[in-house]
Length: 127
Ligand SMILES: [Zn+2]
Image (cartoon, helix red, strand yellow):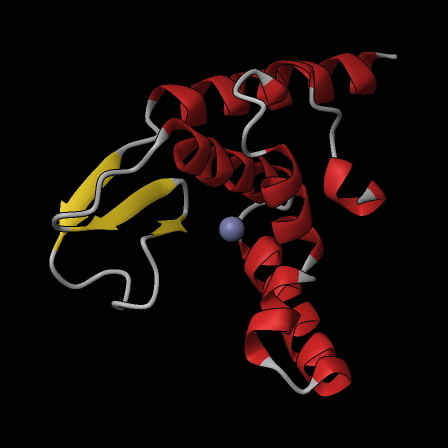
C-alpha cells in the first residue's frame, strides 16, 4: 500500500513537472527536413517556419508521457528495437515507424486534446 502510494505520487509529480516544462524550441537543425517536430527527453524541437497545430503538440506530449513511464532511456531502447523488428517485418521504414506502439497511441489519440487527462498508464501496451 505504501509502495503503491509512493509510485502514484511520484508518477503524478513526474507528469506534472514534464507537463509544466514541456518546452517547444524552434530551430534550424532539429529535426531533419522530413519531419515537422521531434520530442527529445520531453523537449519538443520544431524546424523554423513550421507551425505546430494542437493535434501535433498533443502527439508529442503523449510521447512525453510514454517516456516518463519508461524512464526515458527505456523508451528510446524500446522505440528503436521495435522499429528495427518492424522494419524487418514490413521492409518499409515509414510503415515500420507508423506501427511502433508508441506512435500508434500518439496518432490514434493526437486529436483528443484532453486525452492525457484520462489516459491510463502504459496505454501504448494496449494499442
Ligand atoms: Zn510520434
